[in-house]
Length: 155
Image (cartoon, rainbow, N blue to C red; front, side):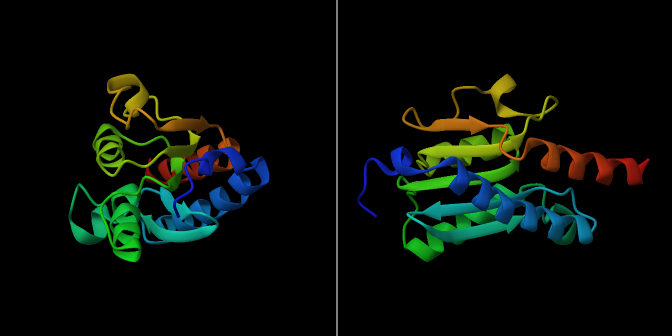
């Protein structure tokens, strides 16, 4: 866990594999009638937290996938700071989630598709920890199509 160069040894194939796990979480949300966003948090090569949107199920506007995964990872690792972790999420985090990611000191965020209406890069581009790096567009098409499919059924 004490590896300051954690991000330097992560390959594209690792990113694709972990984003598939996040997509699996998003599909769980979809099946439940939740907005299909999924998230996993990885430390080293181990998934230490996972989550999907539960805002409808829990009647809680803060029950986003990232929030669920951060709580799970903190419980797994035994502490609130996740500075050796990478967060994979299917959709760009909102401002609330970006704030939580920043407070947890996650050092790398990987997301699938941008959120042009509520994404943090538009409204709070400095919300993440200053040492956090961002990779966008991993499995972008699959992530975007899942969201589009969900909202097409709502119309």
